[in-house]
Length: 212
Ligand code: AMP
Image (cartoon, rainbow, N blue to C red; front, side, top):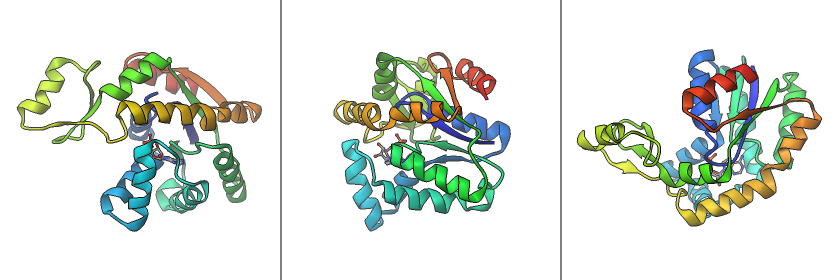
């Protein structure tokens, strides 16, 4: 199964992709995670990417195409993949279409995770990762026990650098202007499925699986 996940920052693409990856044994390919790895590795490219990401802007289409073509060529992606965070512009969507057509492996579906703006803001401003376990938490939505479990064990609740209000509002603007047009792009190709992504992780996952 080859799918693209569409949706604003905070719509839950990463969370849902990870669940599907575990269930179906196909890789989640998150361009955001790949870029964060490059930043952590401290390469020259990583340093340039960090400046762009910290501002909430997009890394150039040509660079992203290079990264994604290499990743899709790896053995674990031959039987399917879940793209999370790519494509993000019309140029990237056209490039992906060309790449997959040339490989004879077109997309099965583009799934839009649909959530209201106020929920997105809470998900993004409240998002934290436990420094000990890597578990994703949210100061608005996780239970006090879950939050305490991390801090009582000596962990810290870390906020992503691009999850501050200024960067978030730019990321949402960039999404509206550059990524939202992809909804029509995939609707025109009869590949679009829309999932109501407001609800618990398990509720949304059930809708997601039903949509596939
Ligand atoms: P994400 O984790 O998907 O929210 O991505 C974090 C940041 O990485 C974005 O705000 C962009 O700066 C950058 N990024 C991730 N994927 C892409 C992409 N497909 N095209 C351009 N920039 C990207």
